[in-house]
Length: 279
Image (tube, rainbow, N blue to C red; front, side):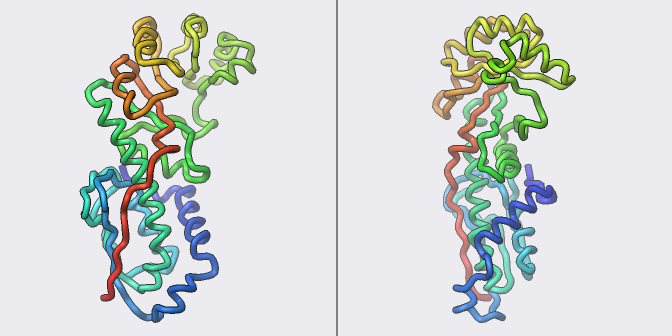
């Protein structure tokens, strides 16, 4: 799934990242690289990874005056082997140098999210369970990180507080209980999901007409028992304590969805580098 570089939030993230790094100018390149010197470079994977964010390269270079040529040799969602070139670029050496770190920061971070997501998706293959992301994202980069999850084969949950109803434990406390929270939420006229932590809350939610349940902080054995008890009366999502080592067991419990904050808050950056040479 390619990254949508036309989205205003994405364009703004790129602009801010360049401004943060370059500021008033790249004084190192200005000091030691002739203004008219031209060069070419390659972005190369140093490990096996799932690529994400490669589509950000064109707007990165455009915002710094453009380049002579840019070839994207792979797309977001592609599985990439060590040593594989994912993009080639040529232009003024100063432009390539001043954009290098911003480009790599996006590629390494977003590909890290996509690569970890792909590991979770592969781990549950054949179970019918879908892997969801969460709102546990880097401030200001949520849309990009969720695009990276999609590139890794995951499914995006809600973008923020504004596009879906998810009643969690503190909402239940503030509303006065599960039935009260659901009664008020149903008036919104949109799909409603509710978190349940005890069998009592589960029964209350089902009795009140809940059709999407978030089963929080259960063991795989407990989750399997709850899913059997629910018996298709509502869609089930498992969350809390899910790791790459345990996600298969949770999927085999029969849940429709598994959400994992680790996809975005704990994804390690991948090893990609930029190799420059004179034309």
